[in-house]
Amino acid sequence: MSYREEHHFKLKANYSETAGVDFSKYETKEDLVKLWRDTIDAGMHGICFSTYEDGQEPGDTITEEQVERRVKILKPHTKWIRSFSCIEGNEHIPRMAKKHGIKNLVGAWLGDDMEKNELEIEGLIQLAKEGCVDIAAVGNEVMYRKDLTEDQLLGYIYRVKEALKGMDIPVGYVDAYYEFSHRPNITAACDVILANCYPYWEGCSIEYSLNHMQKMFGQASDAAQGKKVIITETGWPSKGESLGGAHSTEENAMKYFINAMAWANKDDIEIFYFSSFDESWKVGAEGVVGAYWGLWDKHENLKF
Image (cartoon, rainbow, N blue to C red; front, side):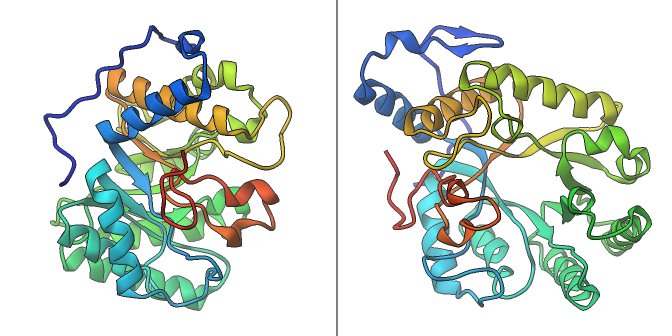
C-alpha cells in the first residue's frame, strides 16, 4: 500500500481557521488517539526522515537495510520524504524512497567542516544526476547556527544551481522562517523557500500554536515575494521539558499534529512533519525533549 493522491482526509471535527479543531468533543484520551490515528492513516504531504536507530548518532554509517525498513513503514502515509545529509549512509534514503515511489526533498548538511561540506555538495549533485532529487536543499539552519558566512552559503547554493541546470529541480535553503526576512540575498538565490516553523521552540501554548504557525508561514511568505513556501519542519514533542507555555505531553503532541494536518489539507500548505521516529541521540543539546519528536517511537511502532 502507498499514499493515494485521491485519498483526502475529511476532518469530521469542528475546525476554526486559527484555533484549529474543537477538541472539547474528544472527552477521553482514547477519543483523541483515534482522531490522531485517523489523521495519520489519511496520509500527509511529507515527513522528515529519522535515520538513527537506538545507539546510533550522526557520524555513524547507516545501512541500506535499516533505511529501507523505515521507508517501507512510512510509505503508506506520505508522498514525500525529507533527508538531511548526503553522506555516511544518508545517501541511501533518497534512493530507497525513489525505489518505493516516494518523492524526495534532499538536503546537503553544511557546517564549519569544509571537507565534509565538499562531500555533501558532491553527494547532492550525484543524487540529482541519478534522478533521486525532486527538491534540493543546500544547508539546514546554517545561518541560525552561524556555521558559515552568508557569502559562503550563497556560493554553495549557486554552485548547486549551476550543476543542476536543465534538470528542473528547484534549489533552496532551509532555515527558521524569520531568516528569509532578514537575509534577502539568500531569499533571492532560492527557487523555493524552505521554512522551519516551531511554535514549541518559541514557548507558545498548544491553544495558540496553530495560529502562531500560520503567522510564521505568513512571515516567510511575505519575504518570499511570490516564491513557493514549504514548511520543512514543524512538530511537537510528546515528552520532556516545558518551554514557557509550551508543554511537551502526549496529548499536546497529538493535538498539534492533528491541527497541522487539518490546516495543511484545508489551505493546501505543503508541510514536512518533524519527525518520523524518536531518536535517543538527540538527548543532549535539546535536553530530554529532543528524543521525543517522532510519530513512531524508537522501536518503530506508532507512538499512540
